[in-house]
Amino acid sequence: MSRTRWTLAAAIALLACLLSTAPAGAARKATRAQTAALAKAVFASPLGGGDPDFKARYRVIDAKISTISRSWATATVAPKPRWQDSLQGGYVIAVQPAGTKSWVVVDFGSADVGCGIAPNSVIADLLGIKTIKSVCPTGTGVE
Image (cartoon, one colour):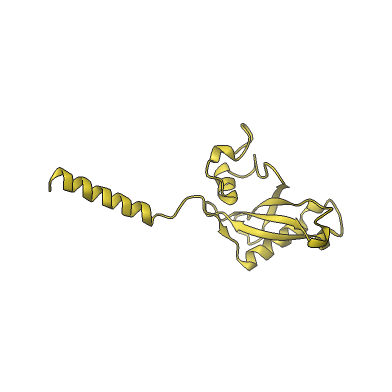
């Protein structure tokens, strides 16, 4: 085979590999059961600061499971429509400890959530951020 044909064959093979490879950093939407389990963890955590009406005022939506490590998840904690003008939402990072089927909320907020707790690659995956270095401020991430 001539050098030109070999180069063309290699280029076609490389292109085929690139087109058939799933993109990295593609957290997937949680199933209904996973979202329900995450919501249970959120409402069982101390996020509400002891507010007995926390569950009545907030809902858990947009849950995602990391494709880098299925033991990590995120979800948005949003005020219910009646409370949207007076309450602020945020998002949680949760982990599923090895050997369990339950989630544990490890961080909640609206910025830098999970920094210093979850691996930067997992946070980037869950939030859909392309550059891992831009996930957490310098010095607070987990490499």
